[in-house]
Image: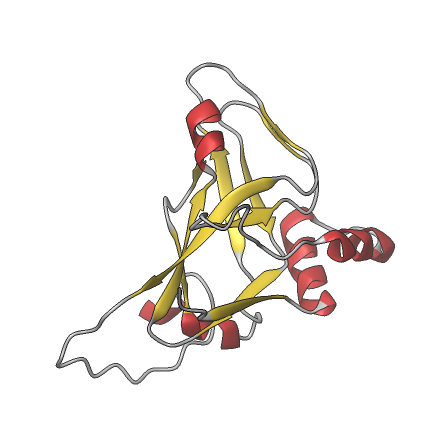
Length: 170
């Protein structure tokens, strides 16, 4: 097994900005408590491919509802690798909990972006059975899997990333 990456928390200042942008103004102490409780992703077993990401707060999603979660996590990885993010299998199976972009792609150069490579997840409860999703703080909701990738022999990309969603096509 190749060891190619390492998870980190974003800085408190970055998390605070992103939390406020997502959920509105909160007391600094409240945001600090949420930040302090953030757990780095980890595998549940030695045979697990996915690194579980955990909710920093309780999340309740009625059928059809969506939430954007600033995870407080960034990932440093070797060039030539990508972190692919999916909902945890059980949540997808039981509730049709989905990532809005279907699969989150975290590129190796995202770590160096102005937002510190802060990983967000946007989830929707897409149930057709009327089920409400309730996740307690610290519950695994998404899994990230490291995948090696290749490029074409005539690839000439030289641009430097500086941003998140859509930043590489601007």
